[in-house]
Length: 435
Image (cartoon, rainbow, N blue to C red; front, top):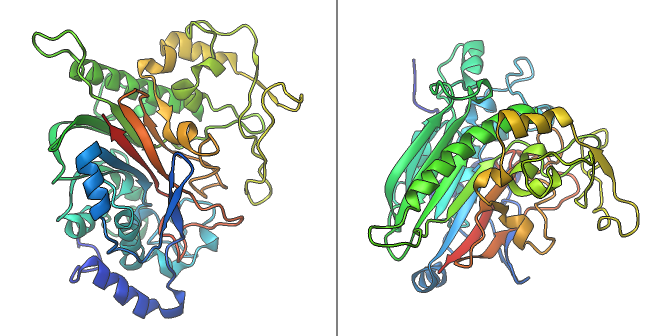
């Protein structure tokens, strides 16, 4: 069986992009314009073709203030998209019929995912659905070290059997700049091989890396690939993380103060952060807003099952497109919606999962806390409509300051992947300054 990808790397990334531009001619498009928005309201745009922009300014800032960029990116596995045909619809997303088959060729789309990463120059990237590992290792070897873990029950197995072809399995990965970081420890959690894991975690894979910055600091990143199953998965992962963090933050010999090891998480959580219709975001709220589900003790189910909410209400039309506008502040004009919380789910969290306040991790979404709108992006994916499924979480601390966020295009109609964007998820990126 041929285990090598159909493309053969011969040139640099810039040369490959120039070849693609010539090969695809009028079909080739610059990547969708995006900008790095300062948390104080300023923004700095960067075109898709500016791969050789001068980054001396960023490097000088890094040296002086300990600043790092974290990117979260679901890149869309080649095995879940590149072998689609109308006669053999092996792709599992419902919007596949509207995507140009030619742009799914990884000899095109793979280079555009690299372009999306390189144009923002992140220091750490958390990635989901990576199946062409050697492709990324080849083109990023001078800058990044890649830690990879294969999904235990990848759906690509079924695709390969259906088309009678060997396909590399997808999984999660963490990329980090080896000139800036030394990897001290690495953990990989595989729900299928852990006898203590709930059944819902059978296809869960998590990578945890503890970094020592070669310049000034030590810090930590994590990546992880119905709401009830996700609550089991999140409880399992957070319990593991809590144990790791407690060990890493243990005071050094002769010291009483805990070690400063901040936690950052980039993930495709695969669930929304705001309610719509009768959907309640139990998973997101349990991690970031436990007060919306539980009383102040966060262990006792609230007596009032009708919980008011002041988030963005989404209305999904026939095409699954988001057309809602932000609701008024809770109670101000009487237009807020009420949601009926499922007491069975709350009982599951409180008793079976022994849920505690935010899983004891005190995490916040960097976009919800620091964007101008004070909310997560309206959407990060077009899978099943325009929905926000991707997040960057961090632990608020006086020594951790978010300084920049990458904007998400706000076009009225978006179909992904497209000639101007290579995945069905937009990447997210945040710049943090550690003191």
